[in-house]
View 1 (tube, rainbow, N blue to C red):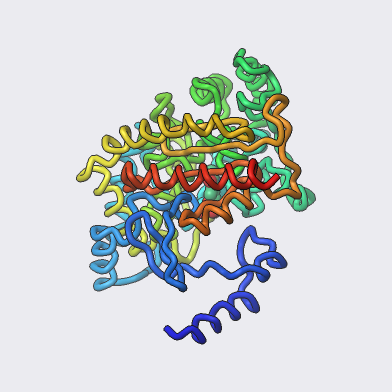
View 2: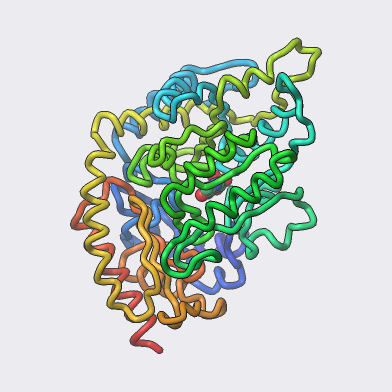
Length: 454
Ligand SMILES: *Cc1c(COP(=O)(O)O)cnc(C)c1O
C-alpha cells in the first residue's frame, strides 16, 4: 500500500467513522491506530509498527491472533455455509458448541440460548428472569425488579445499563432506565464498610438489602470476583458464594455475568469455579470465540427453561432472537477455542504465567504514585493516585491513565485504561519473556508520566 493510500484511509477514518467510547473531538487530533495484522500476542498497524496486545483486544482474545486451529475451523465452516437462521432451525457447530458449553460450565446449566454480544446475553438473562416469575408453577409477577452492585457494568443496551452502576457511562440515560436496587461494591482498597482490613461488613449489607427487597426481586446480577469496567474492582473471597447462597435462601434468581471473567481469565475456566457456585443464569461472551467473532450465550437450568413450555396458544414462548443468533462461523471458532483449552492444557500452563506476573508486579510498589496493585488470575490492575497516603485520586481532567497508555503505545504495548487504573489482560499465549517486556514498558511509562514529568 502506498503512503498516499494509507493517508487516504486515515483521513476517511477521521472524517466519517464514529468510534465507540471515544471522544471524537480528541480522536481526530491524533494519528489513528489502524490495525492491519495480528500474530500471537502481537498486533501490527498500517505503518508497520508492532505492539503487544496487552488488553487482549479489549478482554476478548484468548489464545492469541492467527491461531492455526481456529483459522482452520472457520475456513472449513466457510466451505459449508457462512450463516443460516436459528429461528426454528439449527446448524451443526451451534449444536456441538452447546454440548461443549453445558459440559464445561458449572453443573446444572443445561440449556443454551445464543446471541451475539455480552450486552445482549445480559438483556436475555434479565428478560428470562422476569418472564420466569410470570410463568413458573406458582407465579410471582410482583417479583419484577433487579438487584445489582454499584460500579457494575453489564453492557450498553438499555436493559443492561439499567443494572449498570457507572455514573460516567450511565447517568445521562437515567430517565430511560427501569428502577433497580443497588448495593455498594465490596472493594477492599476503597471500601465503604471497612478501612484497610476487611471486616466482611459488606456481606451483611448485601444480606440486609436482599432480605428487604426479596419479595419484589426477580434476580440479582453480579460480575463474579472482579467488576471489570468499573475499574477491575476485586471482591473479598467468599462474596460470590455468599451472594449465591443468599439468593437461593430468599428465592431470588442469581444471574452471573461472566462475559469478562469466563474462559480462563481468573485462572479457572469460570470465576464461578473458584467458589463452587452454580448460578440460575450464566452470561458468556468476549472470550467465547477466542476473540475472533461476535457470539455470546446465556445458559440456564432445566427449571427456568421448563417455565417457558406450554401450548403455542399459552404464549409462554421466549420472544427474543437476533438475525445472527447461533452464527455457524462464530460457533466453529468457539468450538476450536474450547478444544485448544483441552488439547494444549492452556489453564495448566497459565498458572506459572500468573505467578510470573505476581512476582514481577512487586517492583511497581516502588513507584510513588501506584496506589493499589490488584490481580485475579490473568486480570491485572494498577491504580494510580495523586497521593498514596490518603489515596487521593488524580483529577479526572488529567487523564493520567490515558497519558500512560499513550506512552506505552509509543514503546510497543497496547492498553486501554479505566480512568486512573491501568489494566493488563494479555492473551494466555504470552510467554514469560513477553510478560517481562510488557511489564517493563508499563513500568517505564508510569515512571515517566507520574514522576519525571511533574
Ligand atoms: C464487556 C462486558 C459486557 C458487554 O459485552 P459486549 O460484547 O461489549 O456487549 C457485559 N458484561 C461484562 C462483565 C463485560 O465486561
